[in-house]
Length: 311
Image 1 (cartoon, rainbow, N blue to C red):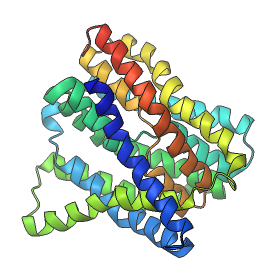
Image 2 (image 1 turned 180 degrees about the vertical axis):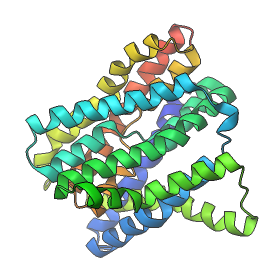
Image 3 (image 1 turned 90 degrees about the vertical axis):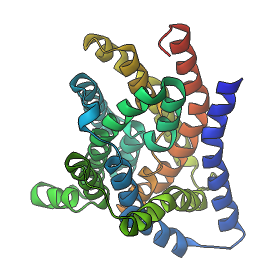
């Protein structure tokens, strides 16, 4: 019962904030202008600060594990390539195709995965999470920029690389990795503003996300969002199991990576899709559906791993 309540408490605040955003938008407290401004602030300032803070606060050197990194990076790239090859076969609209691919591979690991790993695997599991986060966060952002920019505009060469290099989420992630490697400690006068902006990212993103949700207007995206949610929370982690066993990973590593790949779609995928002119309605619905579905799928995966004696 304790594990059920923990899973509910991890996900319920997300739905409450999205519901509040939906309610405030529909009673006229804010409109499209607020959503555009809020997503821009979240995309360019708040999430980069959050990524920098979370990566910088962890010592990469102490938790370095090459097999864990190979599994995390290799699995993510494999799923990304698979989606890029298969999705265009049935989704022809480029903004929709881009949003679907991002929703299907990008995990909400920071908000959902970290506390769950800490609960089921203890401090050693959290150390493994910190290592994976330092690599996966920049990788997610690079791959997301690639698919969003290329699919939406057909950008190539220098234009595409400029979008990657100047993306605020990638800059925040890479600065965090550098700061962690050199052991940088920000003075309190700088750390507090960074921490405050980082703490704003999820509430502000969720309020804006909730304001965009309209099932009546988004019926064309509902089946795509449901498909993305199933792929993200069920098919994605199951595809990874052969790779984990092939690399002969420890049970703890498998637990950490299963939770990573089974987490719902990242909330950051909404402001990124919105700002890069992808199908943000599909992005928002995929977040809603995948978070709802993950309440059951994550519990199921954790329950099975507990039965196997892995946690």
